[in-house]
Structure formats: C-alpha cells, structure tokens
Length: 248
Image 1 (cartoon, rainbow, N blue to C red):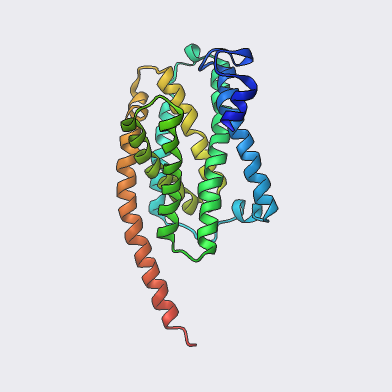
Image 2: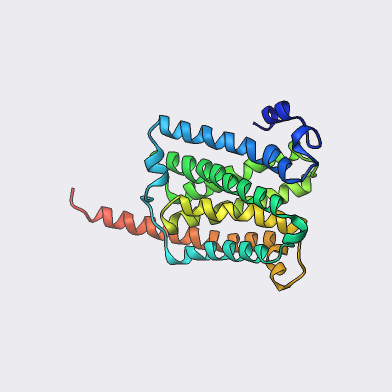
C-alpha cells in the first residue's frame, strides 16, 4: 500500500504531501496506506462472515490481574498526551496523528488480535499459544522497518522486543475487556501520543513515563507473561479435571 501511495503522490517533499513530517505528509504517507489496508481487512472479514465474531463479545474472558496491562499502557499514553508542546506541533499535525493513530490501532488490532486470535481459537489452540502467537506476529510485522526506514538493526530488534510485549498487553486487554474495540482504542492512543511527544516534548513530570515507555512495557510484559503462563496452565488443568469428572 505504501508503494502504491508513493507511486501516486510521490515522495515526501513533493506535490501536495508537503515537507516530511508535516500534517499532509502524515495523512498521505502514513495514514492513507493504513486506511486502505483497513478497508481490505473489513471487506475480507465481511466476505467470510467474521464481522460479528471479531467485534462481538469475546468467548474467552480474562481475570482481574489483566487490567494491569490496560493500566500501564493507558498511564503512558495519558502522560505522553500531557507532555506535548501543542503550540509547537500545531493543530494540523496533532489532528493528522490522531486520525492516523485511529487507523493504526484498528488495522493492527483487527489483524493480530482479531484474525489471528479467531483463527487459532477455531483451530482448537489453547490461550497460551493464542496469546504468544498474536504477540509474535505483531512483533514480526515490525521487522519490515529494517528495510523501509533508515533505522539500524539494533533499533529494529529493540522495537521488535517492545512490540512483542506491547502485543501481549493488547491481547490481555482483549481478554479482560471482552471486546476487540477496547484494544483498538487503547492502541490508537499509543502511536500518536508517543510520536507527538517524541517530536514536540514539554519538559514536565508527565514526560517521565513516555520517556521510559519502552522499558516500562517490556518490564511489565515480562511480569505479566509469567503470570499469564502460570494462570493459564492452572486454568487448563482445572478445566481438564472438571471435564474428567463429567460422566460419559
């Protein structure tokens, strides 16, 4: 999609896109390919009759400790929102990133917490495999940044680790909220606030959380992964014992 958009509108700095990083460049170069991808995902989901399954109540619900994932991500995003220099960024750029973030959250969550989770559950996989595969595919998608940006291998690998644990947090958000719309919205507030904070920061106490967001997500993700593995194994064992006591 990015190649198609680039072929039509040209690179940043040309035509109506304006300079790289400006509002119109964000809308055309970043948002438009994701919007087109989102349309394809919705059309495909509708064609196979999955829209109700994807956006309806989840068949597997979560536990109270999973709210930690929601709380940590939300705290980082709110802190980033409160530590942006909006005057420096400008209303146009802020609006462009908020619009872009909505579709980033939609496309990536529908694909990895929607399609992947639904497919694996239909195939009979347990929730450990579902959660780890969903997070793993989400992380693997970001390996492409090594070839589509000028960031090096070390930065890309750090991003992959971060996105794996962020993906795990989104899976836990899906479980505990019971509906795909909530991880979509949580994810949708992540990219724009962190990008805007990174480019137009205000020095205040709220800037501490987004400044260390990568480490916070990884650390939180490691702890929650351990709890998740123990909890799901206990649940599987308990359900297995219950099933075993039911007369044939």
